[in-house]
Image 1 (tube, rainbow, N blue to C red):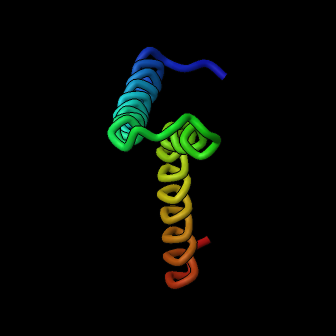
Image 2: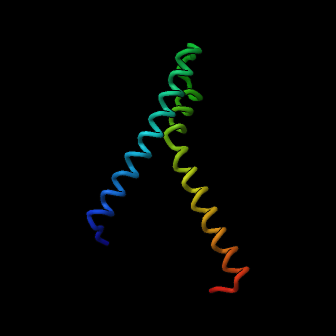
Length: 80
């Protein structure tokens, strides 16, 4: 499967946007822990790790919602 230049640019943009959002939330999570003078335990490290992954979960929810909407539209209109 080959991608055109535009496709590659859009994929690169999407990865950069994802990374920026994930980094923003990871830094906020880090600052919250630093302000609370929390020790580095499993929960704090886990929180930082999950703050990097949550945008993927948001994308999964959006894709699921779109697919469910299309399935509902097909079932109500009789389109195959």
